Length: 147
Image 1: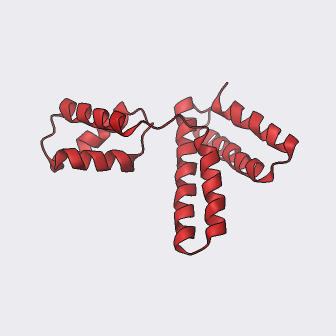
Image 2: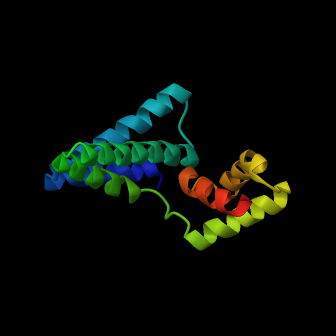
C-alpha cells in the first residue's frame, strides 16, 4: 500500500468517525500529494511522497514555533498536533548514534579534513541517510566532527 493510499484510507476513516481536526490535516496532505503529482505530470515515487510530507512537517513545526514566540499557544498546539500526525506517515528518523556513524562514513568517503569540506560531507551524508534525516541535525554533527 502506497503512502497516498494509506492517507486516503485514513481520510475515509476520519470522515466515518467525524474526527474533524484529523480529517482537515489528512485532506491537506492528500491535496499536497496530488498537487505535486500534477506538477510532476506522473505518479510520485515513494521517496517523492515522503519528501512532500517532510516539507509539510517542516512547515507545521516552523509555524508552531512562530506561534509560540508570538504567545499564541492555542494555534501552536494545533500546528504541533498536525506535525505529529504527519510524522506518523514518515519512517522513523535515525538515532543520534546512527547519524554520527553516517557522518563518519561521509567524512571518510569524501576525505574531508576541515570546515571547507562541509558541503561535500553534507551532500554525501544526506545521500547515505536516504532522506531519513533532517539537514539541520546532520549539519550540527558535521560541524562538530570537522572542527
